[in-house]
Amino acid sequence: MMTLSVLEVNSPDLEEVSAEVSRQIERSPGFFENMPLLLHTRAAEIDLPALVAFLRTRGLVPLGLVAPSPEQEQAAVAAGLGVLKDARNMRPENQPDGDDAGETDTEAAAPAGGAEEAPPPGSGTKLVDKPVRSGQQVYARGGDLIVTAPVSEGAEVIADGHVHIYGALRGRAIAGARGDSKARIFCRKFEADLVAVAGCYKVADDIDPSVRGKPVRISLDGESLIIDVQE
Amino acid sequence: MAKIVVVTSGKGGVGKTTTASSFATGLAKRGHKTAVIDFDVGLRNLDLIMGCERRVVFDFVNVISGEANLKQALIRDKRVENLYILAASQTRDKDALDEEGVERVLNEMAKDFEYIVCDSPAGIEKGALMAMRFADEALVVTNPEVSSVRDSDRVLGMLGSKTKKAESGGSVKEHLVVTRYAPSRVGKGEMLSLQDVGEILAIPLLGVVPESEAVLNSSNSGMPVILEEHSNAGLAYEDLVARFLGEERPLRFVDAKRGLFGRLLGRH
Image (cartoon, rainbow over all chains, first blue to last red; front, side, top):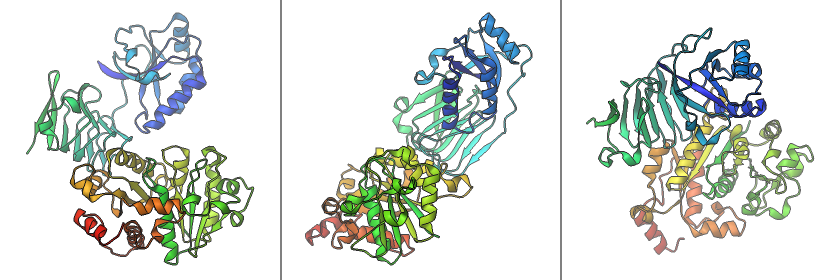
């Protein structure tokens, strides 16, 4: 089991899809770099080879097509993609804001037949020593994230491993972004909007007010997030 | 070579144009040849606050598109020597600000001026982006309330990623300017304190401008408030300019008691 991102293509218009994908990438540059990707589309008439070529130019790595129609299957094989017939785990309803092509994380088995076996190994720990501002997103792929400055309200810090913040956490922090339930979040001053470990999250409203402003450690115990004050 | 300073905030109505006009006027008063440019194409305001709205013939967009040259478009201020204003076009929109054109005009101005102050429109779209694009330094204007602070935070992120300086590996020097500060309301918990704002934004504080009727009055009469030498806001801008130029000045008008004392002395 591993987590892969699925690109939902709901429009047959390649230009529209390209524009949306570019917009998503520009919103969080770096996040999508060399990201392995599955494709899923109901738009049968889309030009698959052209889409694949476009995605590669934007630094994405399309691996396979999920639940294709028979014609799409042929096109996929011709475009050098793998084919995943089992789509039980698809969760298209998770698409953000009805975008034409949104990113949605889903669990999927390793792609079959001819495609690359696994996502590329991570670049390891990432260190950020400037404030992470509202609207910015930092992602430590395949490693820990260390931030030595505050994380502002409306900012997002994400790591596949642990998240360490030597400052105030006012935005969102996500540890174990690819499902590592042993990942933890540490911060000096806890005022977060949202924290999540391996997909289990808590929003500010659900968090005991007595831990606000304190240094904390956040870990996952079964299905629930534990927030420990570290004084 | 001129220093380009952008006055920006994200949120509208926090005092960008007031700050840009007083800041530019203050620099010019101290003998630095300064130009102030209105980037708010379509919602031109700077000319009103500078009191030169009836002398606008050509504007920034005319210069960008080559319909006029800089000499024709720059308006010389009547009160302060060394001060020039480049108005925005009221009839166009932000798409008229193409990057190459803006760069060309700024480069041409840089030969002749010591400081170029760019008055940014609100928002984070093209107008605001172009205003900050070529900046060396930035005055980030914030009111002591949460939405303004959050928007300023967003703008600080953009200064750190979308400017020419940031893209070439350098960084824009950032200064915090807190405007409409009312110490008595901070005391009552109705406003964020300077400390709160400073803690969230984490950039050096350049100046604090108190809430003051003088700002509204002087805007209406087309005079940068820094020229109101008897108003608290005017004095605060004087201090701000002095600090920007490297002088040490203690903060004034940040403490409730003193504000009251000031009122008793007839200051407003």
